Image (tube, rainbow, N blue to C red):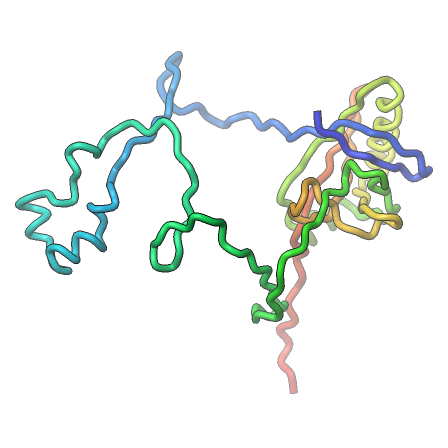
Length: 235
């Protein structure tokens, strides 16, 4: 069970569970009461790809495809693929026997390349010694929806009776005010949320929903803020 170390507005912290949301499928593929299975089959081998075919038959080998079917390896095509491994290729399509060096490219707001540097190892920080903090920066739901693009949403769940009261209180407050609250990592809650080592940094917004004694506390994650372009002509 994955957990998040969370602090509320009263500076009380607790370890609570996090899970991915489960969505109901709008439709099922296949026939009623029939189980559908997906399988992978081999469609081409290296010797039957365009590069190799053109080197043997020339670039205009359409007649060869019709007359002789050189693109089909009778012994291999159609075989069932049970498992596969990732293979890295160079820009010359040569197999790399060691992983390539990763370079972090920093892009400026105008889309131009700003900097290249060696990537840094960044640890996750949501289940760290320092809790994810309730910042108190609340925004109406309607405003958050048009200002940020959400990439993921996860649900926070209690692990015992004490954390039930803890999370229920948060959800109830957010629903009553019809707002979301920004949460952040680090000593002052100003750092983005990183759920795994070298993972994507996110801004986190808590949303609460309550019905009777039931609650749902959702953490919406965004890595993109939507801003209005200034299209006014300049002198």
